[in-house]
Image 1 (cartoon, rainbow, N blue to C red):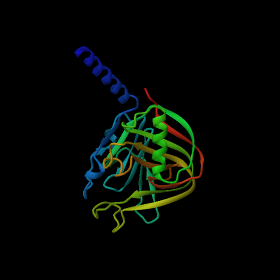
Image 2: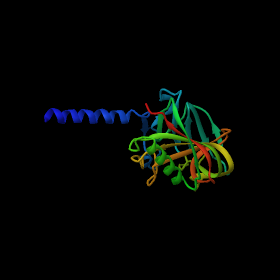
Image 3: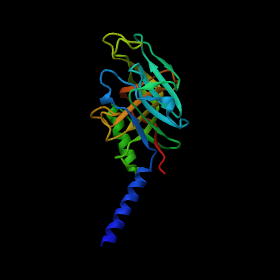
Image 4: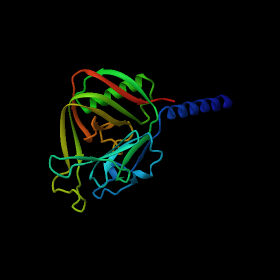
Length: 236
């Protein structure tokens, strides 16, 4: 009986190990809930390795903007002036919290869907991932590419007068785009609320415009039923 129990434990451990290895490991440093009012920096992106297939996101510096890394290409966006934004590329940037994964291969699923809110994206991603055998208890990155009827994204701005770009009473700027194309890059997790997803949400999503001239944190989305490509990390 003892041998049988030991065998069962070993089989379970191997199965769990397989689940953990199904998708690339998601790493995070720092957390939303621990930023406080000082927004201490916890990671220099240039120290992350490997970079060639890196995907990640977080605030830029001490809430100076947004960072998104897509397939080893870093983008950071700022909005220091009213109704204006700027997107730059550099690895020499820091963040108070950052979530990332090295994804060498993606599995592409063609879907037809309409999105009327961020939660709707969360539901679609979870539904398809579960149907395809992904373990929803493990965090994973995802992407959605296609045309979007209308979406709104924000870029955070500094909250401390000592930080470049500070404007009193302005914590972020929102920008709305209609009939736009690009990609939504996100991380799904049911266990990281307050870490890299907001309370009450399982997703953290950024939007990168197709021409790479805008990038920000997705707030709202409205689309009629259309064809999209959903990218999930290829399982091993």
